[in-house]
Length: 184
Image (cartoon, rainbow, N blue to C red; front, top):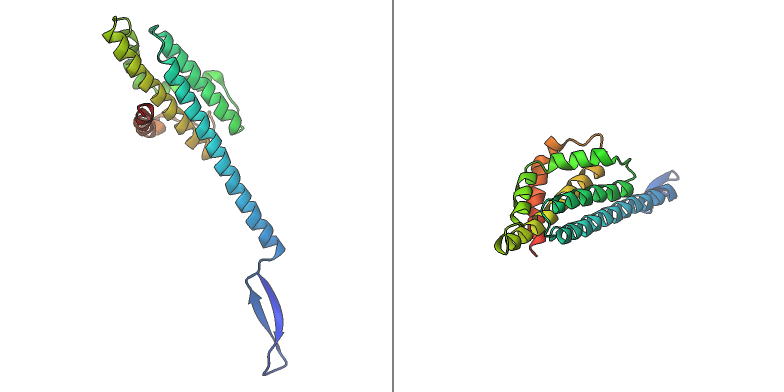
């Protein structure tokens, strides 16, 4: 805001009038804030697109007929997705830590995925139901893992500060959302 002195008609004493035009510093601050918001929106959009790309890739790889190989491939995809997100957020990446944290998040999903994967050995019905179930599970798990880590990274977290126990409920909700994404 700028203040100007205006001569008052009833006296010789100037009166201060405040105008709504911002000072150069205020204008620079507004632009900077807008740029910060734009940058954050762009980063979130890029991170979301990364998660969607890997979720679709997970769905594709889950259709592999070979039992257990699909689970190994999904693990690799999750770790690669976290590597991509870490690069976007300029966070130090550790392959072993990312793999461990992903496994911790997926604790409740892994036994189900293993059973579904093994069902693929049963000809026809087992294969068909196994593939369909693994495709949905693969996409949902990648979606949920990615979204949980985006939220964590956005709040200033790193792989070292991530606590899977705290994120478990959020992961479950996002996993359900991911299943809906996988069935579209």
